[in-house]
Image 1 (spheres, rainbow, N blue to C red):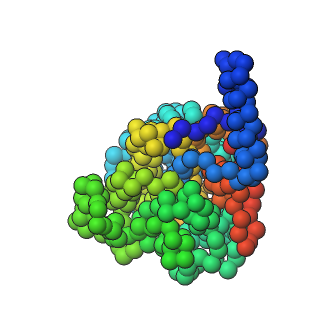
Image 2: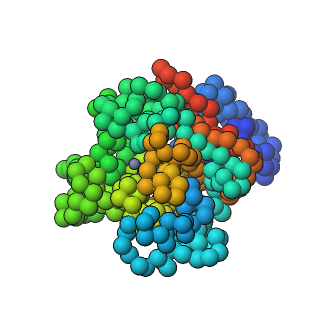
Image 3: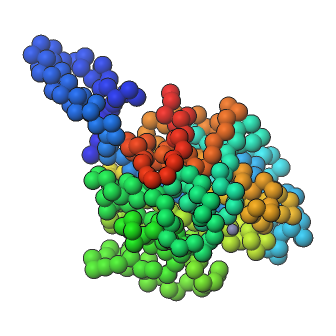
Amino acid sequence: MAIVPYTSDGLLPLNHFKHMNGMIKNLFTFSALIAFSCFATAQSKPTDAKLVIVVMDGYRWQELFQGADSTILFSKEMNKSGRSDHAAYWDANIENRKRKLMPFVWGTLAKQGQIFGDRDKGNLVNLRNTYWFSYPGRSEIFAGYFDPKVNSNEYPDNPNTTVLEYLNQQPAYKGKVAAFSSWDAVSRIMARKRSGIYVNVYEEDIPGPSLSTAESFANANQHLVPRVFGEGERIDAVTYAMARSYVQAKHPKIIYLDLGDTDEFAHAGKYDDYLDAGHHADGICGDLWNTLQMDPFYKGQTYLLIVPDHGRGIDAKWTSHGEQTPRCNETYFMAMGPGIAPKGVISNGGQLYQEQYAQTIAKLLGYTFKADHPIAEPVKELFGK
Ligand SMILES: [Zn+2]
């Protein structure tokens, strides 16, 4: 279904009428007025928009905006990957370097959307939570505020209503929200029993009975892959195969894809593998975006947001994050989709916080997220001209 081309103030554009005359025009104007009055009374007008949010666990802004970090890459102490193929992502020129690492972000998203958090250009994105690790980070992203109670990766079901839970209660999105994660804790962060969101994590199969060939293969294949990271964390290529097969078969309207290879390789100190993981995450975003744009259900009416859950330290502390690691509360925010102005890297000296993403997600889909806790304002730059 096509999106009606409302202008930013919700009115049909004037040139919509200009080819019509006489009675037909009057009739059309009359029906348009009725349609508009219905629209005006519904403050949170549901649209048929779709949305994808990709979380890249602990992938730093430094690699996003500057490419591979030579201080770490060429250091035997700081880079424990034991590999010698450093040339894959290295280039002395920063523009070439960052494009080698993330060709989809710089070749497509930067041209069509907006990227916040380039500290070299004076634009800041920070965490609001003070813990600086994974569960509290995701809780802040999806609940839209920092809840100090949520202070552990072992925390049970998230007591806070997330924006995805809220949207899953709206008629237009009910049963149309799906989350795929490499890390099993996402099932608790999404509180799937309470929220009713479909959540697929570590070693879980897509339930039948009627599965597509791709879904059946993704289910079987994930049990043939070595456990690279141990219990509770599958590799991103597997998570993506699950997600992609489900998306093509079931057409969810909201897709949350949570990738974890970056964080795992960083904790292990393997910088080359961490760069590979970032490059692969970029490739996954690109493949998913192109897949959606070939499908009339998604084409031209889908938003893509890409965010991390936290940053990491610098120099020898690049492997770590958490309260003891300075500067790992520095992150970034990327968005593109219908109506988002193609401003590229934002260099306006502004400041965003991670808590703003939840209301941004709701607003992009035409809703105002409400819950029993405070919710931060949306990212207003996405909604301007
Ligand atoms: Zn971590």
